[in-house]
Length: 294
Image (cartoon, rainbow, N blue to C red; front, side):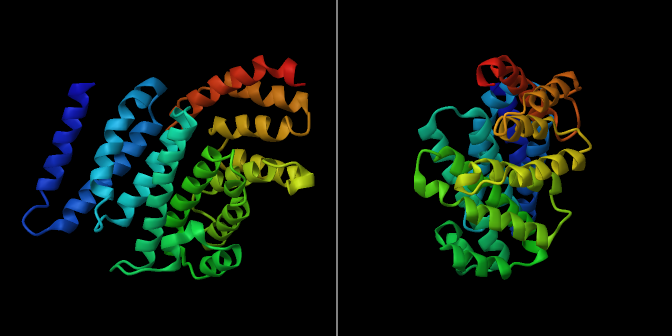
């Protein structure tokens, strides 16, 4: 592991040195590309333990660039995504998850702020998570198509933050805001991460029972759409469909069918491998506890 981290540091240093001598933009772009390449490598890893053990060192490297006030939008988006994924998948301790997801959301907010005001300054999006719902809706309407990646980074990190703070009512009260942000993202660019947006909407509609504002029928439609958009390659969408919808409506047949399909599938698919391996592990757990639940 030490050698792997050292090699990565050396590559990163070389990439930055290529931009030395007054060419800071090239350095920033090189770092952003490495962050994007790292995200791809993580998603294509079929051994979750390798990612769990190695990711903290890479997160610190990303921090060293993203914390700079001149950090590029791409770097901030990557930082938000990596921290969100790590906090959601590999962190079991609630207090630690709160800290890491808070950092992820902060990077997401900074990305959207930088996207709207590239030369600095302030805007409503710099304090996005603290906006009242009506002010949020107004701010959302001011976004443009080019803002979609930053809005996506903020929305996903916000969802992870809510999950980590699920024991706090004020955090759960942010769910309608996140749903509004996802709706605006679809309106801005329906082709941007469509499967993931549908998946998150499905989860949002099934987090609460109908008496408290949930809509399982709408949730089912979103889950089915997410699966279709991935061509069935995103096994996590089927697991969430089973856990969030089938269990909510006590549909044992659908629940077991979806999980059996997950376990029978080949998890190795570009862009999905890590999450698919984790999805298969979760499918096994859900099936093992199905008799107790149903």
